[in-house]
Image (cartoon, rainbow, N blue to C red; front, side):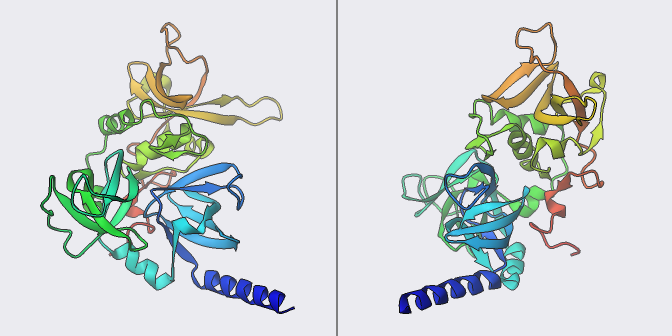
Length: 322
């Protein structure tokens, strides 16, 4: 009987703690969010380090979270979520940060490329500045001292990180910058639910490329097709999104199942097997034999109420109204 009473008490304490800590921040480089509270459950998406989440439930070692970038509700292992109170979350959002701009890198335990690894980091991850991080630490290259959301400290290569506030305030985003980012994903394997350089699905690719240009899209292609403005195929510009799927037929509505990034000169980049380039021109050898149902322009339509928002306008990243 005592065993059951103790188990019940522990369960109540765990529930109370999780109820008090309604918020959290991702503390893994790319946190895997699953359909159910089980490692065998299908992957739904990934959330990058530094992303704010709302904790909406718990089960054993798992937390049900509603991520903010991209907005998605699924289950993640509690080890990768640093739980916070509302006051702690506010302080975290207002804290100065760096964003990782390298495809892959590490948090080192010393300011040296030969030092031990605290953890891995990927493009789009956020780390908090330490008081002395405004200065480059002398080593084989320049380093900043930083910490993860949970407080793990270490050093990152200065050339692989940018001041997050300055990065988010850029005004030079255009088709050329979208394509430059997209090129970094070429050859990355297709990964259902993947939303990072570690592996992407089709909408994970478009989401990641736009996020690294300071623009937050919805997670899935069926949502992304509603963003921005529709453009005719003869007016395509680099960076436009191309959508494929099944046309409406009788009582069956249209179904969007695939998205690609237009590169220009009839070429597009998409995640199909791996991130690769195909043509939308039937006369080309690498023609992608699926009909385009929609083309949408995101650039020029950010923060205009059509679904794409800037990182700087997101309350999950910056305190608004200041």
